[in-house]
Length: 376
Image (cartoon, rainbow, N blue to C red; front, side, top):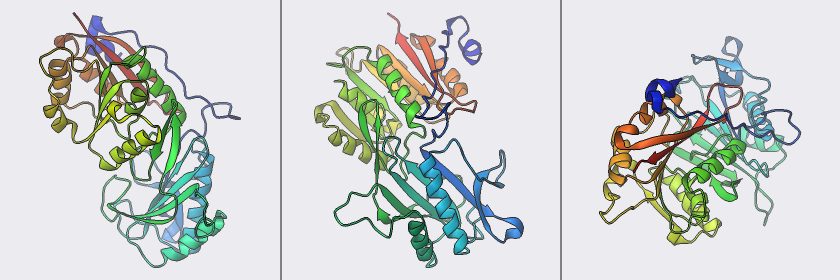
């Protein structure tokens, strides 16, 4: 309906959604959230710490005894931390960071080998947290550090976040034990995921998404194809495109994510000539990437902007300056996607297809891959 309202007769048929594949042993899309996130709150009469999720539309913490959409290993780690905090009588901070110590816990669980990274987010690095760390590691049978010579399959960080706001992490992170990263395998590419950098929440569906983008951007072999990936993150689309043989320029302003992308490029032995990384705001980078007047500079542009959609200046540059034969627009916000696709026809593009992917089962949220083809 949103596309019909925005594009009228030019609206494409929306394809049936591609589902999240079930995990082995599951009868549906459960345990798919590889990024586990719980918040802490005060218990009854403020006397004990509880762990759960915010009630919809509020900052009231609802205690949770089980979260079946989280990766099971992530749940185990998070509940061990809750128990350690309760044992040490650590008070929960308010959502704005006031009045307590513990704010939330974030656990990243690798889909294929269940390695994990846990980050406890607190208002300050208090001495009492040493006891919490010892109790936590003991509870999950790890000890204070991995055995000599072993490659740890887990990691534990402390993040200090003393400011109000909706951001998960503050500016200062202290690595306490174990690994500093885990690896994810998606569409045949090994990625490096770190605690604070953005990485896909649902790895099983992310594999479906990457394959859909690859098939849309470069249907055949990528040899001699030049692709520009804007808002590239940790190389989520750029790396498999380069592995396919495309010469990819990836633009991302988050320097930690870009460092992860460069590391993954080396890890996958992708030739440097096929992966160019620009750590820059997209708005600034496009000014330096203005195509020459000697023919097609980019065969395809992949756009994966933030939830609010593509900034008008960037969309104008892609559709009216770069003018690639194909644009692949990835969006997690149907309203923003429909709004931005209104610019396609006036710029000489046809919206050829829209493929939804069920990245967040049991919710109304979908990821969409829209393909725009330039008309002769």
